[in-house]
Length: 134
Image (tube, rainbow, N blue to C red; front, side):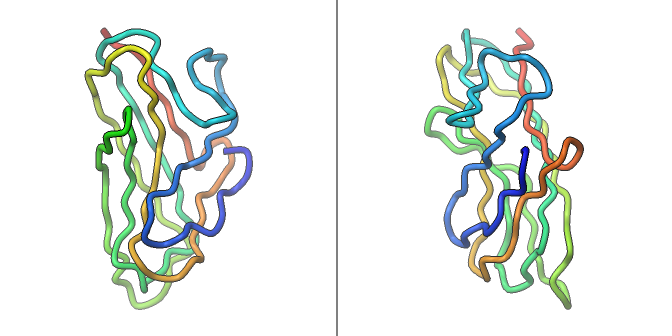
């Protein structure tokens, strides 16, 4: 992310707008924020997020990946703390067998609570990567 993605709206899946590249890649579109698989095969994906201003009023936070319209669910946590947290990190790595020309995008959902959380930007805070392994 080149800038923080602010004001995560509760109770809906929110596309994470990864808008810059660390490496030249012709299969990730920084305009629509999607990776499109060039060929069918097994792909390794990695998602790392720093979520700021965690709301204890939320039921849960969860990261997901939408693969061609099908959601794959990753780590989930219940922010049942005594006070709102300044930040929390979530990471997820997974393998998927995917067909050619399939769009893949990272998402987050905050179930209920206040609109106060954001995804932190910066070269080491939040990242999304994927590659063909076979």
